[in-house]
Image (cartoon, rainbow, N blue to C red):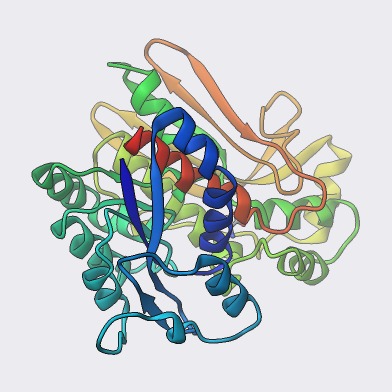
Length: 346
Ligand code: HSE
């Protein structure tokens, strides 16, 4: 089976995905009989291109990575001027949505996904915005179209979280979850424990590409809150916005507080949690002191992880360990999108 692919958003994650698809091209064909072509690309600052016969992806990567525009690769009889036109004219069967996250409304990603599903494409996104602002609608639309909407990379990059709960826990009731979902604040708290100032530690998280473009989203807890909201929305099929999580970030944690905690063999962590009690869901993101009995205590630097409590398996944890030389993990996030693609098409 052959798939035409549209890429909406062509930043670090999407480009890593394109490279991963190329690297796995032969095994996709030999194991699952799947072939593909790149037929539409929409970039934030380097133009748009469609070609239903297949774009030269190596050239597109080279152009964008050297700061150039890809419009010369466009092969439509008229200019393409926005993402929706790329989706409409790409003849794609599968759309990868990786435009920047909008925590308030989920736009424009929501409209990109609606358009792609209506045109009969499967969709995978790493974008948390449309998950928290449109999950039920998008799942229903996909179902009506006989297509699939997936979002594995939206939480914990490429580590399987949603698919594990969906596929490997049939009829289990999720009671609660608790974890560390934002790596930037974990790096900041870890490095402050080693004597760096808040500013130095944040600068490091920015240097390695971990912090969001606007780090306010990390340090004030919004990235963590939208991840909690995405887990609640999907796993309990109960819409929740990041605003409803109402997060507290790490700006109020002083070096003195960290030093005092260290003397008591404790640590501050930005703890993300939610629980369902008598049908009511309570979610929170806030800095909390943890001691060595907590599974969160040993998660340092860019490690993230979450423990799910269910009525059948008491505590099931997924941990994404820190990687030496980490540069923001676009390859891992790309793998989540790739896994969505393989799981849909195989
Ligand atoms: N800024 C995010 C974090 C990147 O620090 O966890 C991954 O979503």
